[in-house]
Amino acid sequence: MIDHVKFKRALLISALLVANTVFHPVVSSAGPDADEIREKMTEIVFLREKVKQNKSLAVKILVKLKDQKSRLSEEVKAEHSRLGRISFEEGIQTPRIFYNLKLMGKIDLYISRLDEKITLFEEGQEELSFIYREADDLLKIVEAVKDIELDQLMSQMDHILKKQRGAGNRACLDFILDEQGPDRKIWTEIFDG
Image (cartoon, rainbow, N blue to C red; front, side):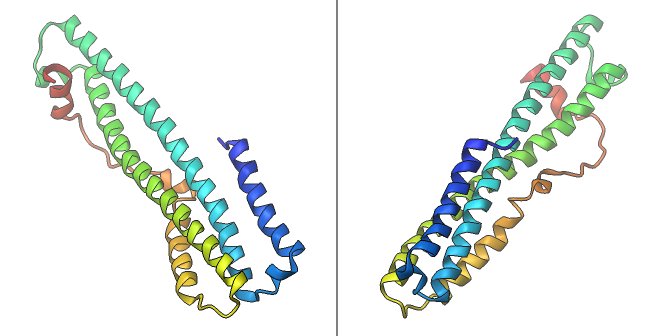
């Protein structure tokens, strides 16, 4: 779900960058290098917002998955209690226990992958914020000193933007899971851990 306040803030920043270009002739006279930096900065703002939204979505999904796993665990415990103290081998003969353990295994995979994605999103946000600040600082310098070398920063911005574009795409949260049977480890977590 889009956070409208944050989206409006990103839109405002972009509008200010455009207004700065249009209404300040000193800035626009800095040449194409300054314009290129402004374009990259605008892209960074929007991409950073997309990454932030995807992180927020991933965190919400993670919370729901953990809650679902907890409910499934309680169902397994209730069925285990109803049947008397039974072994893993006996437990997986019961459809409810078998399918709950199988689903909990899939949930564990999703949780693990979401944790990795959340970490990547956090790193991406930090990286985009850092390069935005660097670009902003360099833009100020370029506006003051028109003949500065920009190739290194432009290359760095291109590299980070290319790297983070995938994190700004919601499809990066789609996983393909292999089928697997119930996991003895989950059984042990429920009853021994």
